Length: 103
Image (cartoon, rainbow, N blue to C red; front, side, top):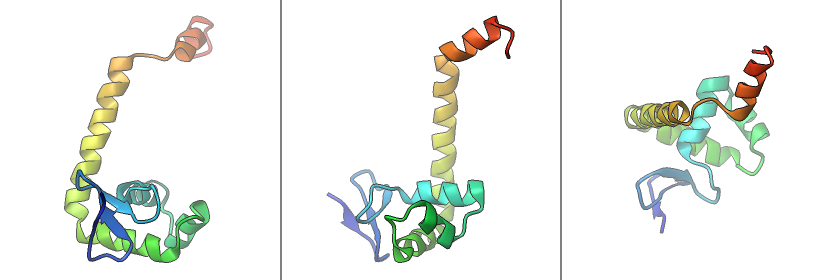
């Protein structure tokens, strides 16, 4: 069961992961988009019309108040993704394209 925070639209799940209340999006996912694409709150709202600007601003405020912790979490997630990517090897499509000299 989600736990309320002092941020109006932010709840923590059972593992302590910050989620946007009323949505299925993690705060970290929204922040990753802001970092990767340089999106403003208005652009985030355009890309995710099911989120209110209040939810978006609350998520960004939560991030800035917990930036060090969330940045470490993002780094851990990216390291895990890289490990999984390396363990899975090349996809069948990549293998086929290389065999045809297209890569």
